[in-house]
View 1 (spheres, rainbow, N blue to C red):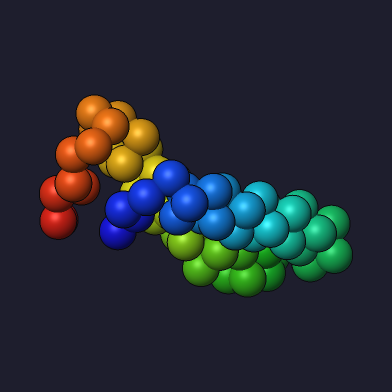
View 2 (cartoon, rainbow, N blue to C red):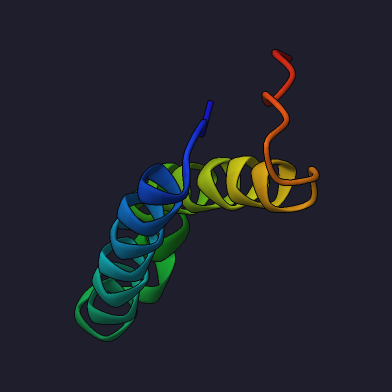
Length: 67
């Protein structure tokens, strides 16, 4: 769970890294294997994006709620 602006920044950097990795996989992996190879990375990107959105849509100064 993201609890600070600094954690948002780090998470954004990690999402960017994983998206770059997915772009590389897309061009270097056989089409029939892409879904298997990329699935875990996609799920992680989606999870981190949800966490960032949950944090960024809360008023400043409020603690994020646990899921």
